[in-house]
Structure formats: C-alpha cells, structure tokens
Length: 305
Image 1 (tube, one colour):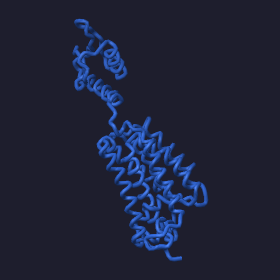
Image 2 (tube, helix red, strand yellow):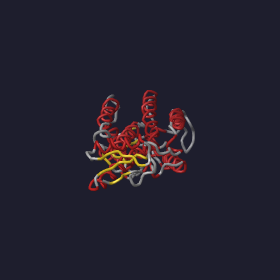
Image 3 (cartoon, helix red, strand yellow):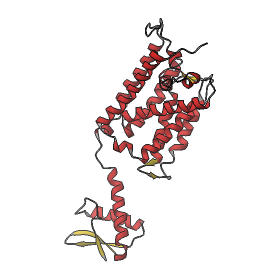
C-alpha cells in the first residue's frame, strides 16, 4: 500500500479528517480501492501501489476544479458592470435625442444623421464601411430605442460580470459590426437598416459561446444548455415586426457566438482581466464609434433619392 496525502500539486500539507474523508469519497466515486488510516494522529489515505498514480491524478483534478471557485476575484472581475453600463446606455439615449434635433454644422444646415449613418447596403459597397458601426447607434423611434436599451442592458450586465465591462462592450460592438457586414454582403442594394439589435444579439451569442467552450473544454452536460435558450430568445425578440431585420439579428448572433467560442478557447477573459485592459477595451469601443461618426460627417454622402 502507498500513502497519499496530500496529492502532488496541492497546498494542503496537513489535511484534517474532513478533507481526507472528502478525498476518500472522490476515490470511491472513481472506483479506486483505498483505506483511511492514521499515523501519529494524522489521517491519510492508503491505496495499492498500482493505483497510486491514478489516485493522485484524480485527487489533483478534484482539487484544481474546486480551487477555481475559491480563487480571489480580480478587480475587473469583481465589478458587476451595472453602473458603467447604465451610463453608457444613457449616452446612447442622449445620442438618439441629438440625432432627432436640427443641428447645423459639417456643411449641413441640418445634419442628416439617419441618411449619413444608416447601414445602407449600396453606400457600404461604395466604400462607406463606417456605416456598419454608425448604424448601430441609430434608432427609428422611442420604442425601438427603449427595447434595445432594456434587453441589451440586461445581457450586457450579464456578460460584464463574466468578462468585464470593457471587453463586453468591445466584443458586442465587434459582433454588431460583423453581423452588419455579413448582412450587407448577402442583401440587395436597396437594403437599409439601423439599430443596436445586431449587437444585442451578438452579446447573447457571446454569452452562449463562452459557456459552451471555456478553457478549451466543452462540457455538454451543462454548458451546452444555453444554446437552445439563446435561440429561443432570438426567436422571441428578433423575428417579429414588419421592420425587423432578421438577417442582421441572425448574423449578429452568429458573429457573437464565434467571438464567444474563440474567447473561451483562447481564455481571453483570463488573459486580459485587469483595470488596464478594461480601459483599453472601453477606449477602443468609444474611439471606434467616434471615428466612424466623424468619417460619416466629413466624408459621408447622402444617398440619392
């Protein structure tokens, strides 16, 4: 028989009786024969020599899985993302108000926000790629705006709690841009769309992708369940109404799913989870949006007709 206490790689040098019994249950569940013994009042596990390596591997895996739940939370991870997300959504609402006002500037007596910033397939094909971003910030009416703010806010907060606010907004913006780009490539030239819905469904896709594939492991028994849930949300919220752009919603969701799967596989939330990277991702999101609107105002053209 061989003594096993603690399993190699763990921090427990003198486990108590409760911990040894816990390890015993793990070995029992794995079908590894063993006994609990004591020496000088110290409990330990005894296994057959031929089972020692397997027993150590099982206990080490068990300790690593449980240690993940006990690891200290980094500053960026400890934030709920709710407060910051609220203020960003408030900026989106404020911009909606601005886009409905008669503002003189940039060579216009009244800036034609919708005409300059909408995702007009023909204008995008003519080189105005920035519309793929500016279109995400425009909304047709208050109901359209409020719906996206509420639904998008909920899912952005959920995503922020998993990967941080900065990364959540940046990945959501990238998913929306990609969704609009794919939609434009596959739609006819008369197609025009506006709204943040593409990014909202991108955020849903990111959440699902992250939960399906985390740390290069697919856990079908538990993590695959969000996929039908996300598709149900897509069906309920993204396929109704005569002005609904189903293609943009589907491609936004698909783009987000790919982003989420890649993020989980490459462990991006763990690699870039710090206050510094929070600022980088948030600044990149804001910077890209501002740049695209400046491009629209200075270089954009109002579609004929």
